[in-house]
Amino acid sequence: MTSPSLSFPPDFFWGCATAALQIEGSTEADGREPSIWDDFCRNHPERIHGRATPEPACDHYRRWQEDLDWIGKLGHNAYRFSLSWPRGVRGLDFYDRLVDGLCARGVAPMATLYHWDLPSRLGSWENPAVPEAFAEYVELAARRLGDRVTHWMTLNEPAWSIMNGFVTGLHPPCVQNLDRAFQAGHQLMRAHHLALARLRSAGVRGKLGIALNLSPVRCAGTSAKDRRAARWADDYLNRWFLEAVVHGRYPQAAARRLRFEQVLDNPQPVDFLGVNYYYPKWVAHSQRPTQFHLNTSGQSQEKCQFSLQGRLQFVDSPRAEKTEWDWEIDPQGLEDLLLDLNRSYPGLPLMVTENGIGLREDPSCQDDPQRIAFVEAHLQAISRALAQGAPVKGYLMWALMDNFSWLNGYQKRYGLLAIHPETLERRPKASAEWYRRVFQTSAGSKS
Ligand code: BG6
Image 1: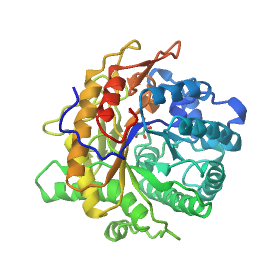
Image 2 (image 1 turned 90 degrees about the vertical axis):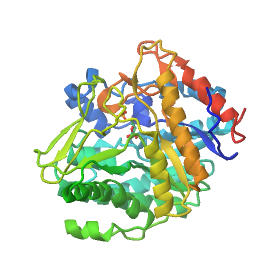
Image 3 (image 1 turned 120 degrees about the vertical axis):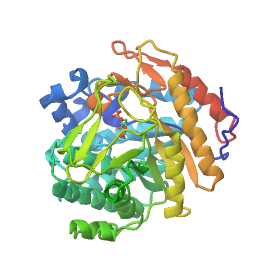
Image 4 (image 1 turned 30 degrees about the vertical axis):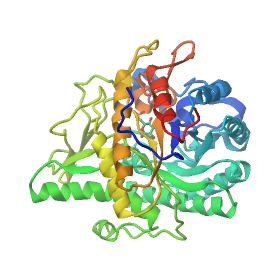
């Protein structure tokens, strides 16, 4: 099955990614405080498929040793997980044991410091006190784990937090206001730079970065208005955050257009850029009323919609192969993205920190040829990007196991490990063994 066209450096990182809220459960254990997602699920059960909640998720908080054994058995040499800020200092005891367990199995611990589970008491990212509160938490984490974590990611997908939290309003705090979106985005970028400064001053040994959701933007029309719409999408969905991270400032022309005057104090460089890639965006001009919809049912006739009146809409690609959740499958987009990043920021190390496919699978499913085909095609894309000089350092598949897929509840399954909904028993799917064989043929993995 493994394609001969896959070629990777010997020190390549191979593994999977997860996030605390999506796998841990135990949301009231050991003094954990509520997060905005716990509240959202409690207050708006009708917005989440099957009225699901992050409880018990995969019960990873209690079954973490078994999960680490799986990571070891599957031969991964890296694991990306997130720290649950709502667990506070006591939670760091848990991550301390987790990191020790990874090191004992020869797996590089890669920690995301924030993956959407903002403590409720802080309100939202519009609150200008949040970045400093985050930096204080980061400092505690740095002191506790800084001698062993190999890669730190400050934030997961700030653009997606802002897009869904403050533009579409589909995620908490469910606001629909562009001005407020950019102000909240600014607090996230302040938090990112403050966090990097604290990690550096704490003298952590790992490399410092962030995981950005990035999508090549493809113009779906031929008019000047369509081209302007595509530029707008690229400027604000990709370049806004990229420039703020890499150069510590917002892209000038894009900021001027919005009369956005905020600046980032004491910007910090990153050692690597985490790239979360799922699908490209096809963009055209639109006069349609502003409207947003995400397919959360997995019924392919339910279309995702994103239109900002007078500005743009996302449209179907002319040749799209799609998942049941209406997400386009386009491995070429990943190659294009990695090459574009290497052109824009030559030599900046890149890591694919998320990529995977959500499928509707029977809980007892072990055969997942669609996932194998998806990952293989994306690995080929990375391999081609590497051959053209893009400095890609690793691939972390989303996800280690089926998990709480936000608005999609538990029906949309991403895991190498299937989680039985009642017993929570873990079972490897065919992709888990396939993935192991892929990197066994590459010198960088444990065999
Ligand atoms: C990324 C997130 O945006 O996409 C993950 O970082 C998420 O947390 C993944 O689960 C897939 O999205 P979804 O909504 O299908 O679970």
